[in-house]
Length: 113
Image (cartoon, rainbow, N blue to C red; front, side, top):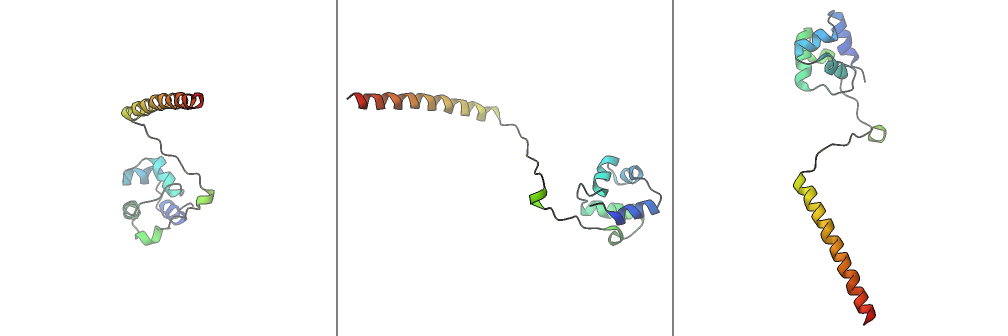
């Protein structure tokens, strides 16, 4: 949800997104994501923006939309599995294979007895 109050206040002051972003210490693209509602604006950022625009925070503040989980694509976290864990998994696979072979042999021995 676009932050209409924020956008209107910024434009009324004749400040571009890039200028405002520089004044609050972020890139224009990061600021744009916030103003367009793609990223939440933190409390600290609201205060900084209000100060730069020379208004009270309440004048420009608009809450973020509630996230509808049914319609939201959840981004999966990416992480690297440590090598020692991967090595342990491989060891367990080998041990599992050996145990399956022993079980098979044991079953065959019991069937032949």
